[in-house]
Length: 248
Length: 57
Image (tube, rainbow over all chains, first blue to last red; front, side, top):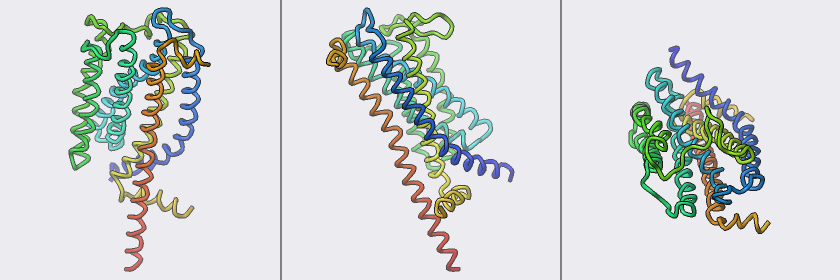
């Protein structure tokens, strides 16, 4: 009984909360994106080695960071879903997967668009590129597995396990440029050391990274509230919301 | 302005990257928004149907 009350309350609460928050996140995202793009494409000086082609990093690097970040967040949801059987965590996990896949795809394609003029090739089977491609397939695997199982509670359990197993790929991607001799360059921005990048180049990159984080928030909330309706079309909380809408 | 668009000869690579990013980001917001509208309409129809049914009894 308590558990039932708890889930009902959390779905309703989440639905209302996300409806209120999304417009504000949207404004914040657009402001950060415009500032980040302006800083990256106009204000930042051209790179002394790579010329203007380096500007691709303002999309590529934040997208690649997000591809890892979202996967780790999904693993956390998966853990919560398995241990405490919280429905909202299950929905948050599956709602994150398409967003993570989109960022991974974006990172791969922009990397390719940078590789062609800089390395002379669209693709190379080096450790960084291969492990990132594997990450894309992991995202697809999660989405496919969830879609394939009819009962969504069972599907969520399977998907949580798959996500947790796949998390071993994350440190492999991150350290691939140090563990192996890759064509992909090592990291320029670091949390612990001083970044080897000029502030005029670095600032827009960090702003873009923040913009993409906010974007993940928006896309996640949108998908989660959509999925909540889909999973519980007959629930009491949804009826209450529909009644409010009709009475307006 | 022309120089800005020219991107030091890398125009194709830089602008394709930016355009692709914008398309992907837009798609990932528009597609769930439309699906949300659809789901909510279906749930509303279901709700009205059930309410009318119970009114009859």
